[in-house]
Structures are given as C-alpha cells and as structure tokens.
Image 1: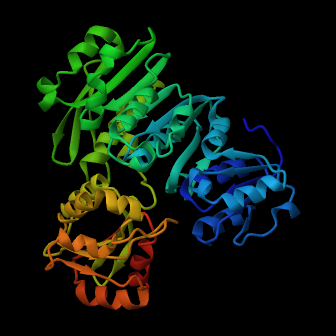
Image 2: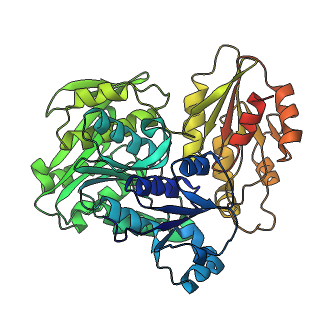
Image 3: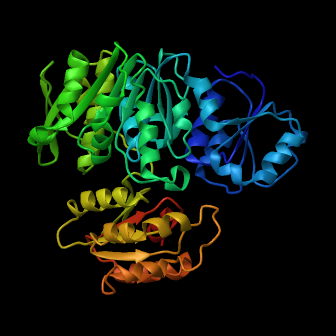
Length: 474
C-alpha cells in the first residue's frame, strides 16, 4: 500500500490515468490535491469527492503536501518539477505509485498497443459481478465505476492497465499478464520496432511463475512468439494461454515449438467467427459464445482474453461470457453521445492507424439505411502525424466522408511542413474537407452537410469530442 498517509498532489490530474489514481487515493481517505491547467468534467468529479485542484501555478508550499505524483508527460515541464523539488516535496512516477496501490493483491496487468482500456474494463466487470470486489485502475472513465476509472476494493485481486508508452510497464510485477497486440506505436520512445518488441517479450515474464494470456491472431505477437521458445528459459510453473482463430491454425508454425517446450503448460483456445459472434471451442472445458453490445472483431478478441484471465481465477467461462453480453463500455470508446435531426454522434479515442481502421470498419457495418459514416478526425501530436502520415490517411480512406481538424499538439512544438493539409496528398479531394478548428465556424458546415441516418464519428485523442457535443447542443 502507499508509503504516505499524508496529502498527495497529482500533476495533470485531469488525465485519464492520473484521475483514476486520484480516485483510488480518495478511496483510501488520503487528502488529494491536483494540478491541471484545464477544468473538465473529470476534475469536477474529483472536486465533488473532496479533491482540491489548482488550475494555475500557485505556490504549492502553502499546502501540506507529502508526495507529488507525475507522469512521463510532465518530464518536459522541468520548471514545475523543479518548483516542487525546491519546496522539499518528494516526487514519484505514476507507474511506481500505481504499483504501490496494487502490489499487495493477486494482480492482473493488461498491456498492448491497443485495447488495454476495453480489456481491463471487461475483466473488471466480470470480477465485480462475481463479487471479487477487486481493486481497479482503468485508463479511462467507465460506467462500471460510476464514470470513474479507479477504485480500491476490499477483495484480494487487483486489475490494472499497464501502459507501455514510456517503458515503465516493465516495473509492474503482475501474477497474470494479458497482452492484446503489438503495433508500431510510441517509436518516439523506443526508436525501433525491435526495441518495442523486446519490451513486450520482457513483459510476458516467462522466466517467473505466473500466467500470460495473449491474442495469437495478432501479427505483432506472432513475431515475438516465433523466437520465444528458442531463446527463453521458461519457469516450470509459467503457463501461456493463447487465443487463436481455428481457421488459421495450420499456418501457425510457431505453435509446435511452444508445445514441445511448454507441453501441458500451453493452453490453446480456439474460436470461430460467426457474423458478430465468436464461438469459442475450449477443449479443456466447454463451448460458449461471445456477444458484445458493441460492433467489431476487436471487442470479441479482447473479451476472450478477459474471460481466460477470469478462468485462471476460478470463474466459469460461460458465466464470464454472459456478463460480457452486458458489457458497459468505456468513455471515448465508441461512446454514443446522442442524436440530433436523425444524425447519431459517436466519440472514439482512436488516434493510431490500426485503431482508426478498426473503429471505422466496425461502425461502417452499423450505419443505418441510406446513411453515411462521416468522420471528423483530429490528428494527435505533430511527431505521430509526421511518422505515420501515410498510414493514418490510408486508415481514414475507409470512411465515406472525412472532415479534418488542425493537429492537436498535446504540448508538442509544431514541426515545419507537418499540418492537416499534408493529408490531402493521400486522400480524395471529393470526400475530404479541412475545417478551421474553431467550433463556431465548423459546426454550421457540418450541420449543412449531415443528413438523417448519417453517423458522425468524432475521432482522435484530443478535444474533438467538443465538436460532437456542440452539434448536439445547437
């Protein structure tokens, strides 16, 4: 548990991960302070629970703070960290603080380039409904916790999202480790795909006792598994659970070496895709189906991983699958904001090409008769846009119409010649339009364009959601 009972200051408390940790701290009865330059629904919810939040750089020395928690995003704000150090306040990285909150319990970490938040929420919902009363840390707000992202439970299990973006996820010592997929994200930190893949190999922790649960359909995961059996010294009590599409089983040349090494410690769980349903054929137990109230293959793939992790804890797969048929979802993950003039407005956090492609493909299948999927996309960070411009454009090309907002900087300095206009080199001029980034000017354009039965998808990790809310509130 946390090493201080005194007041704690969270820097960037309005962020998804930091706000979850702040809610957990409030659950412990510890006085909670926060700094965030912006007010939001998230900060208001924390203030309602008793947190004291600063929106300007006031003198923290006036408050009895015993510890300050920061994220890697705040490492660039050296002036603020120096100010806290000069006040004699100890600093602790977000990941280390989270580990203190979960380490005393049987812990389950969820990692991967995409799907961490959804998978963590799915497993948390299963354990909540099965009365485990787990400690939970989700990197986003969920109706499961009353629109919070974290809580301290009285049970013996903890479930948390493990973020690979800055490498700190390797410091977590989980008993069960879930890995959803591996993609070429966060190369600003890792520099090379090899370095990124190596970090995920370390995450699996095959030389220690425990369980790893992974998606065998993911190409990135397959790449690391191919070298795993030859290069790893597996712990005798390490067990590996792999979900695979039964149609492709014969093409997986990496399975046999793992079977030879792990033998009964390797659990292959096969499934078949039947329209929007997964039929899971688990030779060790029984057959069951997975139906999630959200469209998309990725939701069902993530659900299998959550169900397998719950199985390791003693939950019946059939019971877990029934619970996930009522999956509550997460804020900013295909979240329906409302409807106006027959136009449905959906908000999604997707900002990497793979995420964008998945959500567009999923929602394209559910657009109503004679309607179009209209995407309002806000590129996230100049560095990501420069690195993945072509891939981002290709993923957006799957939508019928695309409106582009200016790049959301997320605190980065602009990069010369990297702008929203750069997308026009790869997208059709007939289906793509650029907006000003000023809501008062952009909403009339969208209103004139949208028609009944259309779906407006607000897509991106910045504040693109505000455009959708403004359209609904006209």
